[in-house]
Image 1: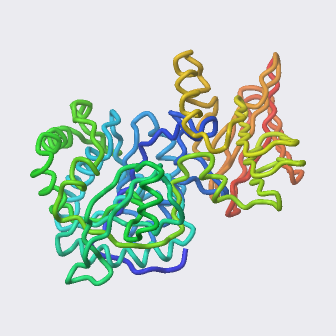
Image 2: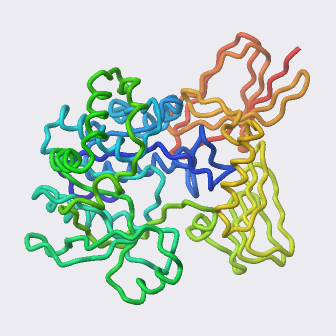
Image 3: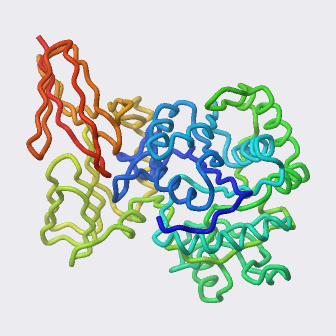
Length: 443
């Protein structure tokens, strides 16, 4: 990423605890969307980490995620910069964003001082123009140093009732590009969203915030004292690297930070910006940000479309052909295929709930195995034969010592054959993920 201004007192905080069920079957409870790649080799988490490191060094980045995703989080962050793993905080239970922000503020104040400025970011958002976001960050940091709790307001491209909105108030006297927040409007009715867009002065709420640790903790002490006390207790008895709060973390009230602090504080301000933001919170949103053919079809992988229009086809594992269909999301994964109305993200979430109730493994996890060098994805399991796809991340060394005779192949014709108990290795010196086909012959 192009060099940007760095801030000596800034600690980015990446919130990586979402489930992303609206992007099933690609995203799953134990493998949510921030851990997957959409349109590139980097996962959304890795892209977010690289983006925030343009403004602050890796050792000052804090990442909060679920304890049952620890191995995946450590692997993905470590491949961006090993120092990121030192800032990993593993929540023993999901307690929403107010607890996550309070935890980050308490630990940042302890490690860097209570004047440290925190930049709260979601791990699973896309920025088409990160330079515009980093430019707005400078305005937000300056306002935060003066005591404001700052959010980023996205210039709305259309009336979207599924987003929260911010009504912009008067400008702050100290910062001409920063404005007071008049009010927050959470997911308005379609007619209200249309009216706000026509009236102007309303921005999408991005869910990103910038504030000093001590300013945020002071506002939380005023507006959500019980939540802050419970979080402080859990942090006090926690420890380790990665840091894990105490078991009492599960007793913290589950509240969004917007409701706990931002919507009730008199110190909230907004910086308008247009970084081509997307929360990629639905298959429709993925379709919007993916390049399309002349028929409006967004195709990733080996997808084909005939007499079809405005479809999203994700076919990274086999050929998928769409014929004579309109407005569908066709999502193929190794163990589940979904065909859905592209715009009906609510129905996808309902389907996941049905699968969970039926105790289907596919609702929550893949069969993949996380390895030090990347991931092993099972493809075929027959008597006497197992076939896996190995995805080796840049800079990693694929090191194997199989228990059974194993052959490995790449699409470029490279081959590695290992007898049972024989060790072998291959290093990925490229800048992209490299894929191997692993064929294991079992007696």
